[in-house]
Amino acid sequence: MHPADYLCAMQLTAKEIARLLGGALEGDGDVVVDRPGKIEEGGEGALTFLGNPKYEVYAYSIRSSILLANKSFEPAKPVAASALIRVDDVYEAVRQLLEKFGASERSNGQVSERSFVHPSAKLGLNVSVGTYTVIEEGASIGNETILSPQVFIGKNVEIGNGCVLYPGVKVYHGCKIGDRCVLHANVVVGGDGFGFAPQSDGSYRKIPQIGNVVIEDDVEIGANTTVDRATMNSTIIRTGAKLDNLIMVAHNAEVGENTVIAAQAGIAGSTKIGRQCRIGGQAGFVGHIDVADGTQVQAQSGIAAAIKEPNQAFYGSPAIAYKDYLKSYAVFKKLPDLYRKVNELEKKLRDK
Image (cartoon, rainbow, N blue to C red):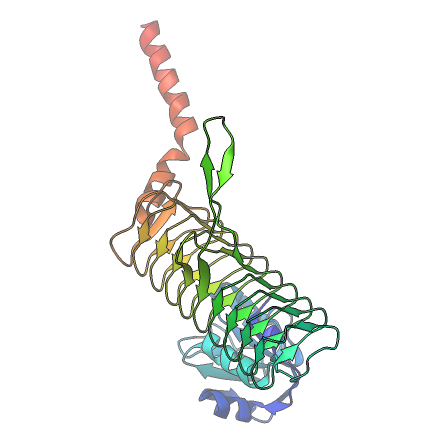
């Protein structure tokens, strides 16, 4: 689904949108849009956008009221839209429209009668607390923060200003969350790290996990992601990091500033991911390694050793340099055919 699909209903002319975005208008400036739309569907009153070149064919064949495109876009044919607005960055333009017109969560300052707030807990100004939410002893919640129904806030938890915790979020005792963080449904922060000591009889004895989790400012965490508490000290999610759904961050791990991680990735204990890394879905990291700033990891790759050089790309399992993997893949996908040819050559040699 395109980001524009989340714009709420609006009534704006092409001239108004061009002015808002600082874009260059071509075509009918008075055409009005009242909804977002996919470029492959379009329709009268729809605002669509062209970000991915593979959708360019629809710009010529599907009529919409307004089409947003990058200034670098050079139409091969006349566009079907009534108006074309060129912008420096079409995705940033969509973001601006989302910010202006998109529905956002706003605190209503109400505390449900069917919630439980411990007398020692501190609520800031205009905090919303939903039905069946529990806030335990010593917890503090910052101004304008929203706690949806069925959220659990443990003892001595600290949550900053302007946060949104969606239904079912659980924050265990002693954990800290900064300002403007968003935790989607069923995120678990501060569950025990996976620490067990093998015993002589083959059983395992639990190692107490006495640390916590620290989530800094402007972090967003997707549904059903878990961030385990540290054995000692803290598991840390740094400022601006974005975690997708169904990610596992183990005890004493660290995710660096503005790093983004796609769904189903797993980070083992005590591994430190650097700043501004980009990690694909289902990637895995062994424990006790450092990953340099700016590292890119392709989906389903396995990182089995430390990455020391910044701004490198990796692919495969165990992962190797991205370009080396592509070269290797070009060879090993042909191995069955090569194997057959080698067998045929060996047979000819034996028959001589």
